[in-house]
Amino acid sequence: GAVVSQHPSWVICKSGTSVKIECRSLDFQATTMFWYRQFPKQSLMLMATSNEGSKATYEQGVEKDKFLINHASLTLSTLTVTSAHPEDSSFYICSARQGYYGYTFGSGTRLTVV
Amino acid sequence: GENVEQHPSTLSVQEGDSAVIKCTYSDSASNYFPWYKQELGKRPQLIIDIRSNVGEKKDQRIAVTLNKTAKHFSLHITETQPEDSAVYFCAATDTGTASKLTFGTGTRLQVTL
Image: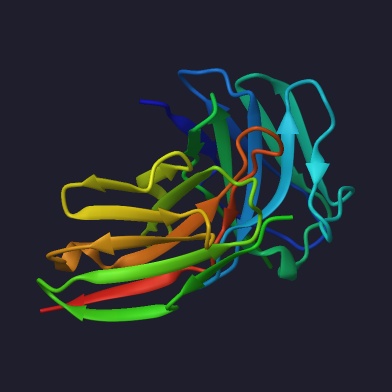
């Protein structure tokens, strides 16, 4: 089946630094990738949608200059949290789309900003 | 944009009983409705899905029903087992355009012995 690899699985960083999260579709080419953020005991909130070779589309309220998304190829998308602050601590999950009905999730990244 | 509401937020059932989780959506263009199970700290796992041209779908102990007119869909789990305990999310999307999944708020299911 379709597999999406997400790294790192957890990261601790100091306030003010940047963190990059990678999302790779291992055995298929993803037409679209999505980035979600999930706070404890809450639902998945879509941050942005990215298509290979084009700029990401951000959801309302998501700072595009803070959450940089690069979708360099059909198998790789990256999310960079710039100048991270404690309130950015969360569980970040990517999802890669294959065809009309295939949505495969990465394993998630637990970000803690201290 | 799409808005998905989900009820109840918590559900406790005894082992062997049935559990029902309900969702409503707002965008009549939505045509794909997956259900996910998420355990703590893990990725959401697809457990069943339904497309808008179907009213009901069943996979062993799990079934989903869709009422397009009323814009609601439900997850039914029969003969619940302790390993069914998790958080369940419904989602909706219009696969033809934006294609982004909008998730419900989640239901924490606890199956007690």
